[in-house]
Length: 435
Image 1 (tube, rainbow, N blue to C red):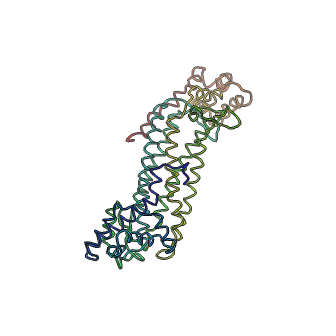
Image 2: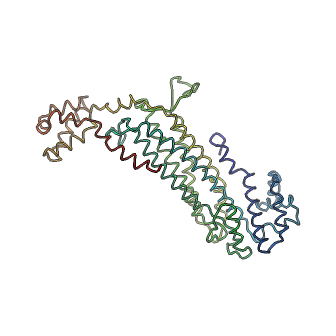
């Protein structure tokens, strides 16, 4: 991923230095286990560990790979140059390349998941804070983009919090699912490496042994992991889309913080655009675009092929780096989002009371009108508001059929916004209990 959309800690997980360090640790831990079994001499295993502080020469490994056309062999050759050919002759004993590659990928993905979970925790805290701040700040709820009935801005933040809390649960599960390692040798039968070696390496690397691994770890695990990232990305876009709508000039209920010196347009000095939200929408597309290749990686030929390899070399770093950046950006956006309560109130009243139509409908049915007659009475008065700019309450009060059923004080009471907010505490208790 390009530096513009990257953060250092996540990038470091996918650096060549980190990768080769993990490769080394897997080989060294495997050597310890083999020495315990008496398969290799103890001094050889110890000699490998003596190189633990060595700096691997990436240029040298690349030079060897240009000849061998094999990345793991290139690394092992370089390791032997550091350790010494005689001391390193038992390295990789009974193992196959996938043992190193797949186990390393699991380590990297679990580390990436830990960062993403921390990102989600920060976002959840920001959403909760804004939800509590605007718990009872009224706004108009919309369906199909059209004014519907009153809600609160706090409820908007609360539902995003609930969605991201579900995403956190999904990611925790996906992390557990991907945290398996395999040191099972060619075609996964343990023919030349004892299962206890796998158990030892996995324990040291923070993984659990894959129950059955053929020559690779089954890719349904990876598909689930990347699908989870795709769902989280879609939730990011869900929030970003709401903010983009709120910042539209005709709406302007909230807007992204506009920092001193910031410019909105090279041509129009007045512009203040929702650039962060739009950027998040684009980044979400990138992450989602990596889900289908991960799903297609599940079907491999027999005990292994490498059709998945090139895909994962791209999507593993790019998806996690992009999502890490997007979550951090969204957290900052939520924390600094500028809210305009007066504009929220003005938009709520824009249709001159139409948002209370359902309450009038229900009240008329309670007074004995059929639902069809009640609906027709309310709708004909509502259309005068749409078409003539009339005041809904005034029109209702002048309607003989409505007034035959409802008194003026009863009509007035049905326009009380408090009715729509009376269960906000109940909803908040559902969302934020134990959060």
